[in-house]
Amino acid sequence: MSNSDKSDEERRAKLVKAGVAVGIGSAAIVAALLYASTVRKKAKRTPPSGDATD
View 1 (cartoon, one colour):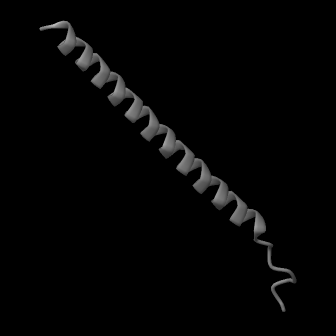
View 2: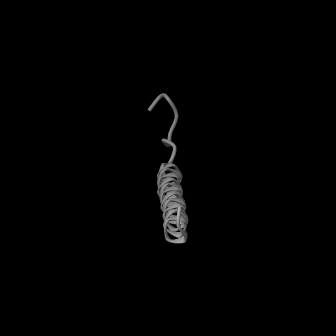
């Protein structure tokens, strides 16, 4: 294997790792946004007022 082939493989491996890292980071951001959205919706709900005889 020549130096060029070896450097190409190393570069490809680095790009794959970077792509995986970006994918995981993006998924984490989406999950955080979805979680924040559901927490916000739960906070906006108000309990029903009055008692059960209304």
